[in-house]
Image (cartoon, rainbow, N blue to C red; front, side):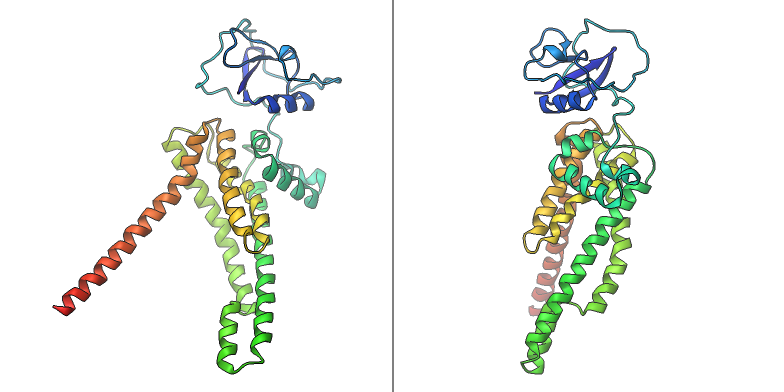
Length: 307
């Protein structure tokens, strides 16, 4: 059940019990912050919430702009959108601090945050600051994927070519085809594919942002959506596992993106899910219609030829 957090008359957002506990431990919240959840008649301080452990050493929370206290405060409707996150709370993921952490450590920590704790990771994700950081992360993930794909292709090509050398020329050609493109050709394809995939990220972010706006789920600009899409590319690390890795990567990318959009835009999960899945189903519908039209045209031509 979600808990509304309020400090000095300003809503900080809605969080699960686990997120509130983590916020207390990290200094995001303090025991004197007010909390409210469905079924409560009024707000009460977090220190009085059952299930929450107060930290022994209190960290100074982010400073809010002055505002008039509003306690007791009439609890807002659960369907209402909370105010924007407190300034200073958006500090992640670790990739945004790669200068302090180092490139490799920041990359590993970002994978860990997005893959295993996307709810908290995207709730704290920086939603502004330019496109450079997310674009570099997107490019890094695509380059890693392209590198290992090329290595796999090289191994397959070598294995099938060696196996085909003991057979006749036609069988060898068949084995080469099964192995895929020759290594140099595959490298060329990857060099072309990398910038195309980077550009496709901008396009897909624009489509999803437009769909999210269509379903009245946006609260921030295109850059925030683009950042979610880029950091969700962390799931591509699963695709390096042969066979099932690509399936796991695709499924978790969808889940991660939905969670990210809902957290960043402070919207319901179903709106974020529609924004992610609607373009996919629309493309599938268009392809089905095209196939039906082609098949119908071929059948019509054959029928006309027979008559």
